[in-house]
Length: 190
Image (cartoon, one colour):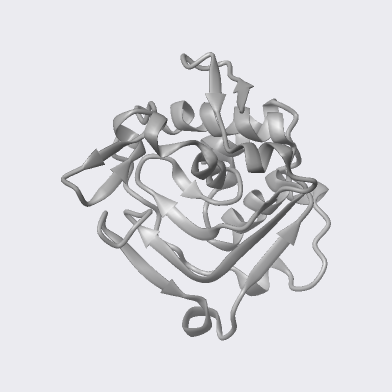
């Protein structure tokens, strides 16, 4: 299925399974990303675009979406997956912060370093919200990142996709200050 896009693509092909699902749930692993800043519940939606259309097979070893989709800036990448999120209107985000990636993620092979929250915090951490923007903003705060500097969050907020302001997000459970950890950001490659 194709959804409208304000990007150079005009429309974006996505999985028909996701498009026709009764409920859409994003379950990302918390990671930093050298081209997109963070990979959380919003960025996760790049994964429902078809590889044969939006990726290039590199050295018979891996698919590289950066060869086909515009990765020239965090904003360029975000425009693509935010259009998908706007079209799908996902129902729930469950962000797994148990074992994540910091530094030059999103993978170990790209320079990322494994984060084990049980070692760093003393316990595992999972966050859930029906507001994907609030989930990602809260996760960014837990990762000790400045939400105002995360492009995908300000862009999604401006599109009306959800809440990012800490005072407007109801937290049930732990206080952010009690679970915040140092989480090395990625050095952006764009």
